[in-house]
Amino acid sequence: MKLINLLCLDLSGCFNLQELTRDMSKLVKLRELRLRGCRKLRHMPMGLGTCTGLETLDVFVAKGRSLSGTNPDNLNDSDDYEVGGLAELNRLNNLEGKLRIEVDGKWWSESEARAANLQGKEKL
Image (cartoon, rainbow, N blue to C red):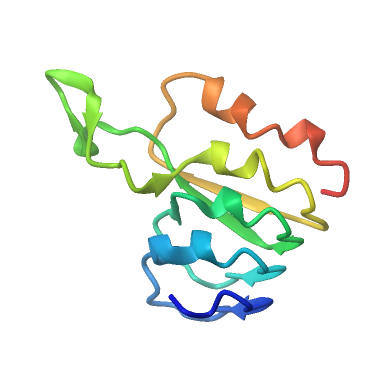
């Protein structure tokens, strides 16, 4: 991805968008990411938390751990290694306004939700 100076990415209304590239983490100057209406978006990419200057994010989609993506013989063996979870929100301390969080699947513990540190987001 060569758009490292991109400030705003508005994908609102991209109804068939299912996933964002994992190269999103290279958009270190990104301030706005708009995803309203992206109903088929399954998850956020791993590394989104490196976009620490992000101020506007209207939707965050996280994939919970589910048996469909996990080896039932080893619950730590998952195909979700490139999927960003709620913990990606931890370093996004400049977020302002409203944020809708959608979780697909089930969480096995509260630790991931705590890692997101949503109570520490003063402007949300």
